Image (cartoon, rainbow, N blue to C red; front, side, top):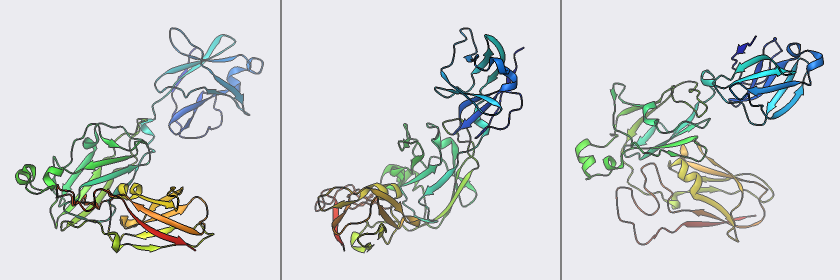
Length: 347
């Protein structure tokens, strides 16, 4: 007799129940629990796990045991949707089909940037951060954008293919249509800007967006914000405030931007280097509202001179960087794309 069981577990094993069980970890089927009473004491060293099918190929892996089960850990996780059979002394005793963890909702939206509830009406892009790698290629099918709680807006975002994901597929960049933001361009003149000052907007990331393992989000994520006047001023490093730590400590170096800047660019375009221009290892954190940055070194600060290097691509939420305004196609010649730096000393 061949018994087929399909189980879905999120973590560790449970007590043996007489049935085969799967141990799940990070939505991967990593172990098979075979009850000892299903095998019998004299045949516990004659257990095999095979892929069910015409060839009945044996599965590479390691056997161990606990109080109630023989534990089989395959060399690579079991494949969703495939059926595996257990045989003892050459005779099949049970089989199991590996379920797809589509009903185990472990993924969620962690944040949408900008995190502030007010943004300039020429906001250029947003970032959606997830807890797990997500499926790509159809993001706009899972994003709903509503104006003033009644009008669902269409064609607001660029449908970029490929989509702009980070390497881990956990952060997606979604662009508003730049042609509608830049004044005097045809899309702006015909369709108008995507956001208008003084309005309330609701961005919803729908629950049906699936992660790479096939599971939907735990819940929909809703971001509300209102728009204020256009931002037509580049970030000004002269307006920044600094809090410097002391030697021998691992306290953070704190930078207050005195405005809200682009989350991803700020996180990657500011560097701390020593007097040999070697970048210091450490952890970068962005302040609430993207209004500052903290840098915690991997090892305690030493006395000496350091530099804060700021790449010219650093920009605010409207795409205004250190060299130019987003609404201006000409780069100001006096900057020429050079990074800025600030010297500071640790005493």
